Image 1 (cartoon, rainbow, N blue to C red):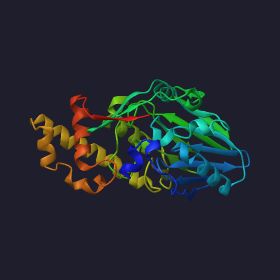
Image 2 (tube, rainbow, N blue to C red):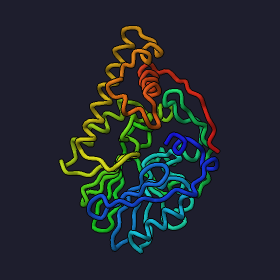
Image 3 (cartoon, rainbow, N blue to C red):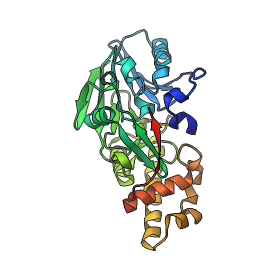
Image 4 (cartoon, one colour):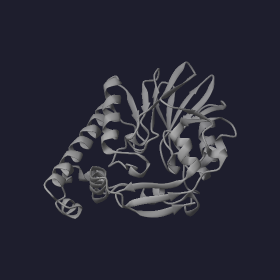
Length: 297
């Protein structure tokens, strides 16, 4: 998982990646391959997808969509700007426009530093115009297709400053992007993210959802409202324990040595290790900007 989500596309071999298709609910499906989960709305009017992984997977994504329904791709929605969620933009936008929050377009156009997921960071290239969303919004946008109101709602300052959470209202499905993952989250402090912002977004979404909703995380298996509640509790409690340690004068290294989030250590077996998550919380709470930078170009 670490290699899949960190390495630049040109450094990866996608030959053996297979797209797994799962029916979620109503007319919504989920595709898993490499990178962020793809949400798919299918109906008589065509197909809308949420996120599009890496460019070398574009043809496999198209084939998977054709396997669900022989309908045209109508729209692509980006949940945020990270390359494991938007890598196929330039290719898929030949067929359908990409929609995203305006900060996604700005960050893709400008490149620059990203990350500070603890000691992880990236220098991202400016993407060509073909990869930039051609439809942007400030607060929200709605695609009315397939008898479905597909609502993209901006939640600022969580995973990044351009996060959108996508609601498939008729199908009773929500795609959380990386504001919810089934592990310790990556929080892009360099791009305006914060633990408090992610928690606020999660709590607001929880309050608006019915009990039987199906939740597509940015990474991980299809989840439930209870899973989302547990994630919010974890964010709140881990932030509190690190904040308390800082107030008592503990250093980052001391907090890591004390394993202050040991209760949740099972969540640290993926992209974000337990120590990196503690570091992310520490950096966020102290305003510290540090991190090794690798280049994506």
